[in-house]
Length: 209
Image (cartoon, rainbow, N blue to C red; front, side):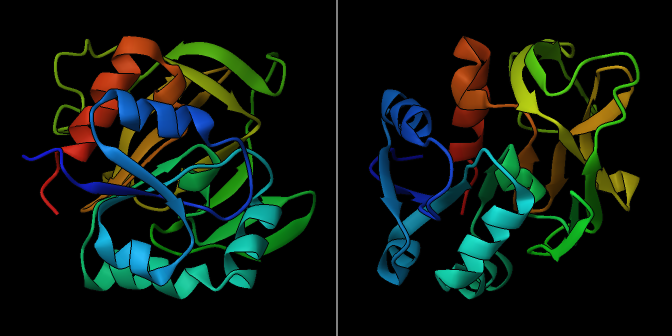
């Protein structure tokens, strides 16, 4: 697949996106940080990054008029989208944070809730392994227990097990990878996960749009 393509990194004004931009560049693609409709139309793949609260994230998406654009590109035009950390959580039906319930993008049924880490400290920061489901296609040349970098306190509790593609343990098992067709999300940061993260990201960017 040609690398002469635009990769849209959605600019909803939350979180540090420089590492995502650099990772896409390193893989030889052209990253475009934008919130403009023309950039959505000209891109082959979409990345929704983010670090921060569910409430702030979805509020910005709605305020900037991005919700309709994202849903049209993903549901109608079937473009591949990768949600990273908060970006994945925003795929959910609802976010439950600080007793506030906010509606998400509703791309994958489920709720974002505080991680039940038991005796482990929150936030969960650092390297941890991901157990991929055997039918998940975006882990080429990666061992099933590959380590990736995490920074989060909340997790995505999916309604349907069929949309869970990876599990990680931190005091308890939680969903670290989701997939529903062209919709893919990771609780970990592939752009901060060195060689294994780049392999994962490159596999996503090679999905046919």
